[in-house]
Length: 390
Image (tube, rainbow, N blue to C red; front, side, top):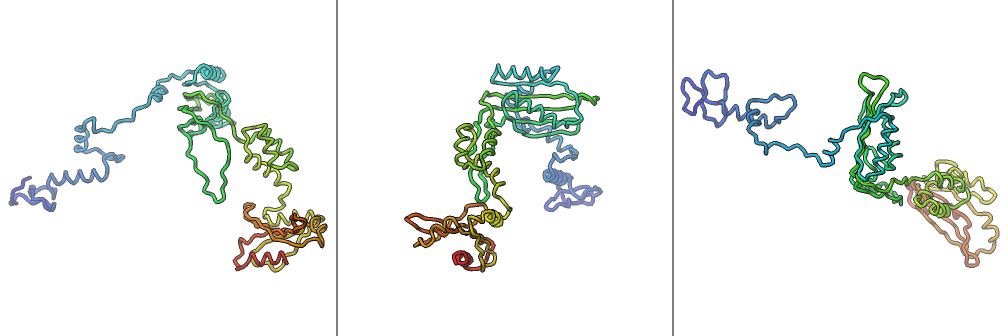
């Protein structure tokens, strides 16, 4: 290959702007330099670490010539990871012996590093995952710490679950307020967080060449002794009090009484559970207007249900009068007024009331519950109220 002028024994490289000459009988149309440039360009586009790609001589030479400082460094393990890796697993004869040793370590040290295993009989009624879950419940009971799942892996004859302490500050989830319309903030008590540096791994694996025996491995690391987990859910004792008094006690009175007996139970929890229990006594239908109508019909001796005619299309309403209030005030009322409230329930029903004034006091004579959510007619609310008042 040469840069000389073409002769009868050479030909010009076909690469544009290249003036090099190659032998006329060469099987290539480009010179050696251009071919190497093209090869490096293709390798750069495809990536040298492409799976299955064979290394060329040029790649090997460049790899061999690379200095140690140019090569990517492997992530160094932390001191805790080194300690966990170097721990020797202890094989215990029974599960009772393993848990006894774990209990002893928890009582004598704030810094727990435990790695042990034991053999157990295979139960055909329980899957490997079920076995792991039963073991972690025993660890919860023994340690007092509650562990939450990090990840799961497994198959038909083995299962591994990794956990971390639910009070570990390194794994606290970021608070994300609800974006749902009308969502209300709850006053649940949050858990205290601590620098546990926790990790719990439980492995269930069937012993090789065995159909009757499996091995359980427990690897626990917990490096800060803290107050034990407190379940902030509704206690069964508090539920029993609400169920017993739901028919006659006000939720505010229940909340005051229960918070005095069980300080960890919040007022919101009492109100929510009281609503779940009491709803069976008054809900007649899933549609709130129909449910209210059916409930009012059960008290025909005390109220009159009005027949509202001429309501605009899409407006649903139910109105009733208070017999025991209106009758004693007959021929004594001088002034009446219309009162209203809204946004009182999940369907945003509007509640109107005709109030009568007597002796400087107000008395409700009748009520109207209506919704105009599906009506499109102009003046729909005004016309509905005219039907109620007229």
